[in-house]
Image 1 (cartoon, rainbow, N blue to C red):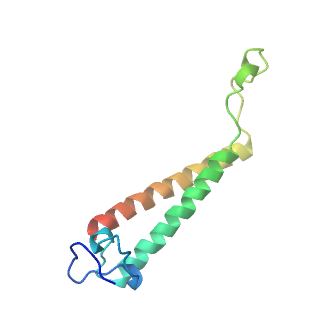
Image 2 (spheres, one colour; image 1 turned 60 degrees about the vertical axis):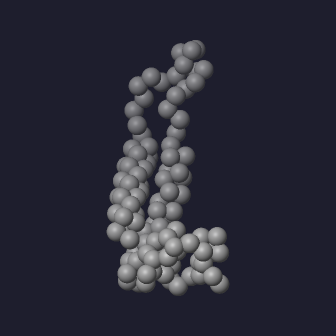
Image 3 (cartoon, one colour; image 1 turned 45 degrees about the horizontal axis):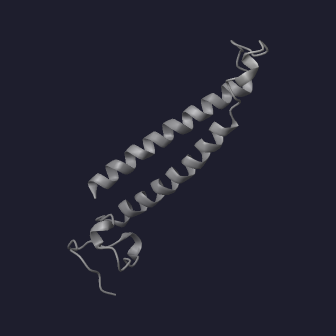
Length: 113
């Protein structure tokens, strides 16, 4: 299969995959070692998993606003956090921090390629 466009010398897609005919090899990350390619794969999978976990963690939180209930006076303005909610806040913060760290690592890895 012929690849159109300029190609980098000694550069092949990660894991020896064939390049789609519409893409040049410049569109693929170029890693000098299989370890770097494996690191990119692991970090990408971890980013995907953390993204799903972060969405689930955010959706598990209870609603803070009471909406129209605040008009009638039945809303709690300064309610205390329950133990489960405080724990969920910590879990969400940890997942968000890990997601940010993996995003930075992927950006640095892409810059190095």
